[in-house]
Length: 324
Image (cartoon, rainbow, N blue to C red; front, top):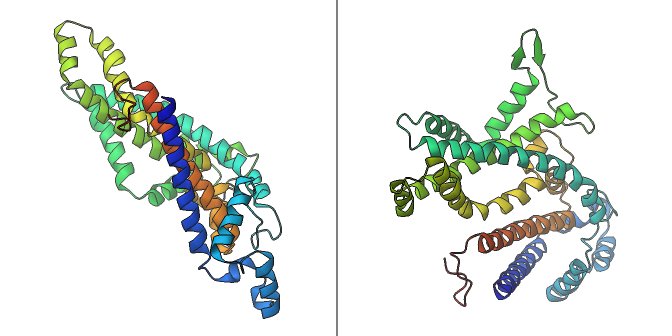
């Protein structure tokens, strides 16, 4: 196990180094306007002095080496256009808690609704009428087939127009996010949750149906083991194993918030920050944010692999790289 973990960690670090190198090199091909606030008003001498201060006049390998040392020290650089002269670490520290708050709540909702829905569909698929499976499938197909941007807008419109009515009382929710107004959290959280609900339900249903058709389940039924015990101790337990490796990745992405959802509801979080940085052409800030998202993605995949190795005894941690 220690050797397996070490290999996975080293592979993740190598992947991160390659992504950082490619990103850094590509951004050096971008127009230099993204490093200056008032580029049109600067003389060529001022531009050259500014580029020298930023180290952009050095050879690319030296620039990459200096950036790597800066990154390892925890310094993401300084914003050039979004908030000139402000540390990117400070900007991220202001934005991340908002995305974390929305992400944690939406993730909790997705897990508490998506997994039971998947179980219901998996069990209903073995019944005669399959009502639960059919209704769940309709929900999943709608969520998966309709572009996310469409149903996000529909959720925003329906909530803000007071579609939900209880007698004389109509539930009208704020269309845009406002810090401190917890009613404005409902629609963004619902928008962030709905995709993961369908995702968890779809894959858990699939794995449960696959497990239910295996020989050891047929043998357990033939021995007279109660159906509830088979579903709980065998089908659900084994179906969760392959699903586990995807949960950490979706958790980390959800915690950072959706780019589109945060922009749609004007949430001052990480997603909106990246969109704003791209619009302002702040090369340094864009570079830092893409590296953060890449690190999140790699970390999620690493956690997924490690969880699979810990939870599934069928995985062989040998020199053949965890053959399954």
